[in-house]
Amino acid sequence: MTTPIYPQIESSGLSHVGYVREENQDSIWLPADKDAANAENMGLMFALADGMGGYSHGSLASQMALDVLTKIYFKEGHPSKPLKTLRTGVEAANLGVYKEAQRLGIGRMGTTLTGTVINGRTLSMVHVGDSRAYLVRDRRSVCLTNDHTMVGDLVRMKVLSSDKVRTHAQRSILTKAVGLSLFVQPDLTQHELREDDCLILCSDGVWSVIDDEDFAHVAGQVSDVEQLSQDLINLALDRKTDDNVSVIAIRVHALPNPNGHGQTGSKWFSFLRRKNHAR
View 1 (cartoon, rainbow, N blue to C red):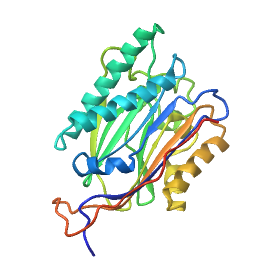
View 2: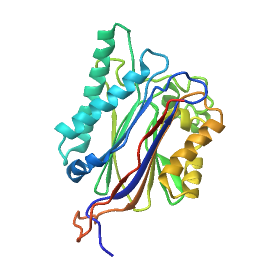
View 3: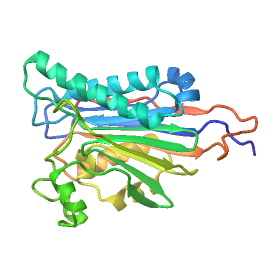
View 4: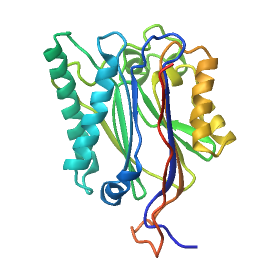
């Protein structure tokens, strides 16, 4: 069997306004065909942002954050320093959203931001807020992100058990977000991927009504990533989520050798079209 020299993955992303909110303040970013050239050096980026509903212009904040992050990463980044570049991108996005709010005279606007880059066998991640990234491996799901919320802080201090998060009255009160102040300190992590891994990025409108183990169960039922993202959206809507719902699903089919050398393998990226449903 030929060993690939690039990750072989499929991805799909969906965003839906839900049945309660009037505006979809979530934004998602998936690679397009034109990004395959960048992928050779900088990897493939996937990102999700959830504009803060309690502030003005949440949809503007989320889209602006993604635009700035991706621009910084691909124009100014270095392949050997993905975490440093992701940090720079989030800091630039934070300052951009903050200044835009001042320019518009609207007080404050903010957004969550979770960005992931797959380069070789490595997943690099930057995270601010309470959107989540799940890794499904061997039919088990693990949350790779920490919620930057008052309730999340209580869980980390062991004052509150994690199974109480979804029903807590203050679940959505963020302690950290992009754009609320001049400076932000994102979480930066790296993880080694394995073949057959499944990654799921989602807004809190999804995970608030879907238990961690349910992500693994749904991912194990379907192999098609487009169907997976749709099934998770449908499940969140069926369970009466009161927020916008967004999902990015990524399946890893094959990875390069750990030493970074492949044989004669070919590039194979499958980018399913992003689907945004306003209603």
